[in-house]
Length: 143
Image (cartoon, rainbow, N blue to C red; front, side):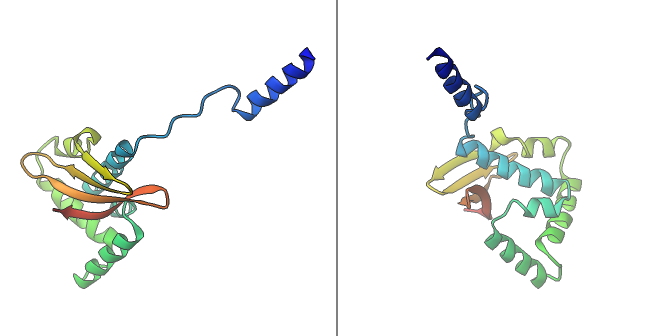
């Protein structure tokens, strides 16, 4: 009987991850803050493809269309050019402040969120939506 109980315990421990607890999922607010600051970091680094990867497929298509209307190939190219230009004109320390997740104020309503962030007097509002289980940017500079 004791042997059977030991086998059941060992099997349950193996199935349950060797006794370790699974990490708790991050709260939506934190995931949204990370998404927005990832976009800002990639933007300011001139990494357009990585910045545009933070967008929903719909918003990415719209961004590609707007870029093509402006004579540029894609969202990634436009974002790279814009990010490099912005980074050149910003004061020292701006990129670090702008990409600090704690500076992003988030309001979540179901599968949609408003993320407000900024440095200095200007605040940018971003729409973030849950898309296939991930929070992605679906609108920039809104209000």
